[in-house]
Length: 383
Ligand code: SAH
Ligand code: SF4
Image 1: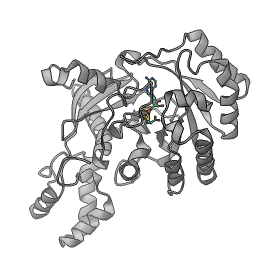
Image 2 (image 1 turned 90 degrees about the vertical axis):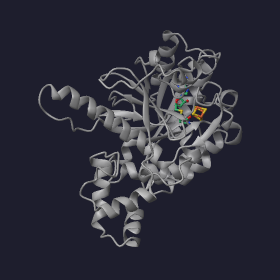
Image 3 (image 1 turned 60 degrees about the horizontal axis):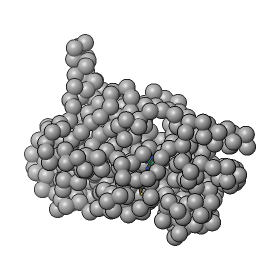
Image 4 (image 1 turned 90 degrees about the horizontal axis):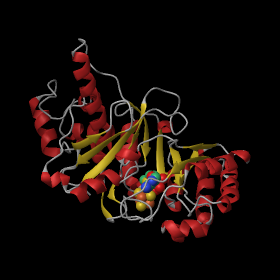
């Protein structure tokens, strides 16, 4: 829950806005004007919506909050992986990662980029290897704060482009983000209603205009919510953070597996596929000595064959204070080829990103530990 007393305007869908306009006796076409200001022009104040009557702007400002999402840190360059750290209205920190287009992972071939979005502040699921859960769960993000991460990045990149192009005499306008993955901080399916409301705003023609098949929800394995998602009308993609192909391995690193062991998880995935078709990916972090051995190959191949799932192998990113390490490259490659030999569609993430803490929760953790924000050393880069 946000601390703001009024709902964020970016939490509101077109229908709710139409309802408000009718209540206030304003014509319906004003809704489209407002949405255009919010999502096409990326307005950041009511005053800038110059074609709206003053009386309407007053009603809007009394009813809704322009949820502030302020960029406090941006690392990485314009053409590589780039990480944004945001400060929310109550001072909480969340992060968003902009990844170069990589059709082999979640995107269709396109030159647009993939944005990795956070859905909670912290995480209650306590996976042993993950920085996001280290300090426990703080709060849910509301839809405006989830949508705000996307808008903030689009805005940042458009400003940057405009600054660059000014020198060449034209204005930056193109969209940067083509794909969304909900793999940042938090467990999206544990914030189901807010995440779904945000997905629908991001998907709507009047909103983000991003296709449902270009959005991937990642879950550590919340079986009941996977089934619930299967019953929604949209065709969202689903990534399952598997990280172990047997219960003993998953039990060791993912407490959620004790509640929903592989039998329950696979049943939920099968249900999802019956309803949605083959939209499943397994995420499998390779952790040295834990899940990178020969014993996982056959069970992993069997699971992905049975569930028609593609496998993404991700070499573990070390987290300060945690004992886990990534396996040697030769071990990673061997794991990959063992699966390929069995006819599994599998990719091994070889790109860099280690240097900017490219795994979820790490930039926030480091920033908080360094006390950088309170010392006021970092400012958003605006070049
Ligand atoms: N809670 C959801 C989504 C956020 S985590 C989930 O668990 O799926 C997104 C992905 O980042 C997950 O696959 C997660 O396991 C992975 N991840 C977390 N810490 C990591 C690390 N240190 N190195 C590599 N991947 C990591
Ligand atoms: Fe939470 Fe996902 Fe991290 Fe597990 S991996 S602690 S579910 S964010």
